[in-house]
Length: 144
Image 1 (cartoon, rainbow, N blue to C red):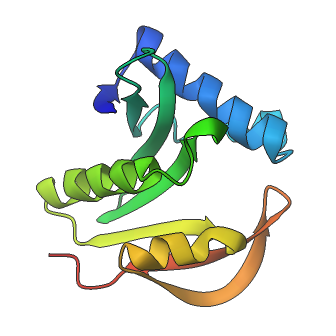
Image 2 (tube, rainbow, N blue to C red):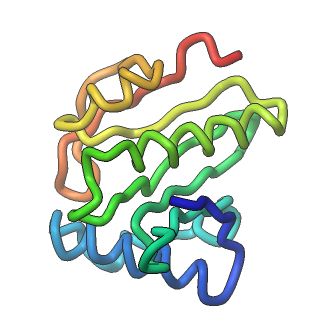
């Protein structure tokens, strides 16, 4: 998988298409909240399968008030459990660090919180509902 920053045009549309596939179609997230006001200011990245040229993973980074928030991390169903989500997250963490930000957070779906814990994130606060799915806030511990 090759990772690209998706700014406009075809690449950003591929990211949106994958997000609709994963979040709206698979997880029943309402389509009107999947794309939000942060999409315009976010840094988007996509992972392209080198054989097929298809978008198989994506994620975004929103930087605001000295905090970087990772979100919308999605991996195409047939490509899960192969390390692509990890690669997307590691790239987003690197991008946040390169801007000098050390406070990196995310809202994890409760059922995948252990995935983010393996990347160094720790949960804080109580669980909450977001897009009709249980979530927990998480913060990267010891971001170098």
